[in-house]
Image 1 (tube, helix red, strand yellow):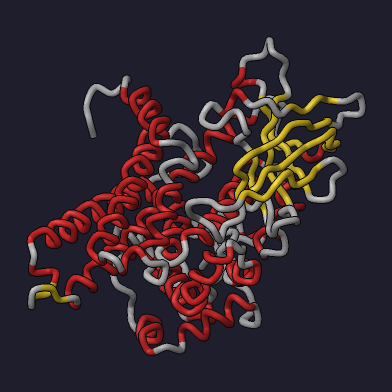
Image 2 (spheres, one colour):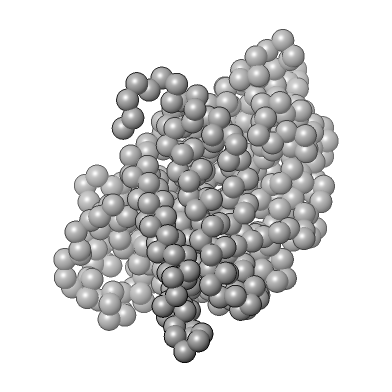
Length: 446
């Protein structure tokens, strides 16, 4: 079973999973043991689990969803509004995800991870985002953009050096790719790393919109994977970019600014990172010099899939809120749900939500995290789901009327948070471009 599931927790292991069982004294096992003490969970343990389905492709996936859902209800939901209003990162809650084994959900157990797959990552992101998309975004930047990226592209020595502390939550990580003057056109980046005679690199430039770039108004995050140009102007862009690990405390590495007053995702810290002759040792180069484009493209695929999962979580919560409200609120002596206009909002939202969730898990269940070249559907599922999630949140506000517009009602926050998903990790326009390029070689549709 994965890290947060062990033999003492009564869940059977599966031969296809990479197994890491830990003593029951570990915090993650203690928490699951408490979860198992509830009547519903005890019933699951005592009886055979329901047959796997598209959204929970194995017993381990189903147990993971149950555990994360319980964590969300008891610990994530109570703090969401407070931290959103304060534009403050919940560091303590972030560390709790490390105790649960969630920060390394796709990482080998030998490095402190849970050894699971893309579908497991989607389950975590869907459940977290149904409550607090901003907290989930910081989780994504750490668990996928740093942890999964390093696990897939780093050497054994590099993984052993950085992953255990990242999986435990001891350090907070992120990734630097976008710049003030290059977003979608990422290979036009200006940050550069010049190789020195001793094999080290001098890194100069800046990165913008970096999630987890700061953990407070004045403090940097701990460790980052940073893309920078190492090839000269004569080198093709796709062969000119390298990937480095940059750590807080390196001379010349500083916080440019923490970016506040965002439309949404306010509890997720966003920052500008500045590099002024930062000396990077050769041991911090990930992969070969000039070989980072493949690393980038491969990790963008899982990033887009889990961003789609966030949108599915937002859609699900918004649909639940509007459906419940429409059944209880009366107008003209009838429940709102009796009116055709409201029925249309709810019915269309349900159909779109189910279509998006099905597309999400169909894509995730077939995604090999070590592969590349899955752009058609990894772009496609983000293209569909992110707009779907935003639209359903918008309809929920409409159904709730004035209440939906107020901060005390969760759909207002979900609506603001949802917009970023159409921009971050690739804009809608970039997905459309990428998909049409991929489809040029298709003779028949699937």
